Length: 198
Length: 147
Image 1 (spheres, one colour):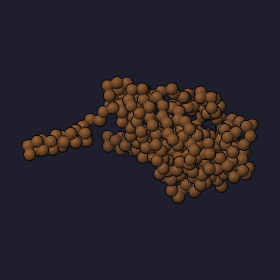
Image 2 (image 1 turned 180 degrees about the horizontal axis):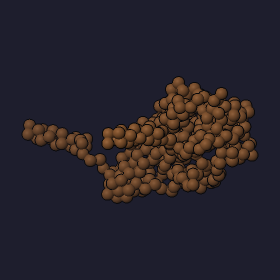
Image 3 (image 1 turned 30 degrees about the vertical axis):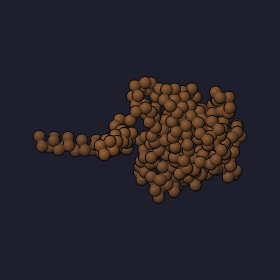
Image 4 (image 1 turned 30 degrees about the horizontal axis):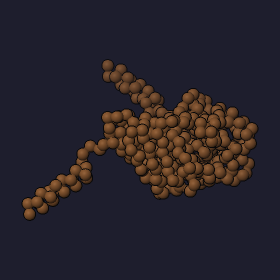
């Protein structure tokens, strides 16, 4: 009787260790991780920038546009907070913002915009074709919409945040609005539980 | 002497009534008004606030104006199949004994053609126009996120 009880207890403890303390991720996790598509665009300093140049860093990639008054500042402010929450570990995290409005988002415009959220945030733009390819690589959909007032346009777009690891693999896709604390928690977990890429 | 005494008493009562004391607010009340900084030369940004309707009558926010912006539009961020878009709204409902929350990711005011750079710490004067309630003047603080 005592042995059975002990075995049950031990079994329960092992199950708890396996599943009970498992980290709950705040986004859609890719099982197994997939190689991240490389995209090459023009950055906010008007220089060519290839995403895989950040191999070795954790990358938080998102798409939007600078004339977006609500969604994009919220996403970028959240990513700013993620870095703040990571403290010293933030040095290994790079935020990359790709414009889906290259007509208005020149490198200079992007520079003023992304640097407000982080001095090391990258803003990428390019030709309409280059942006279309970069969007397709990450299944980003976007559509220009003429404003009802007839003056200008807005851009409807998907607003996911893609987490790419130091081995340049896609790991997690976060939907719009995930709290910074949750993303930071996921990153801390991955950073401490995984060996750095060689 | 009696008249003076009564006069002062009435004055004191009138002052007390007008100060409102700790009584229930009435009409429309605006709180936590804030505006995002302008980050681009085209001067587009968003304003947010909480609008509470303490009356028994449904009301509508019709429009807003500010001397810092060429124009203010009402919008609502909507999500469909993962796509986020801003839908223009002619008016926004402020239900009786209810509220209208203008907040990030939801309904908001879009400020267009902002002529000066708005930096955190600046104040933006706004005028809010309602269907029933009188026009309300609000001072919104420029900041990066809601406090």
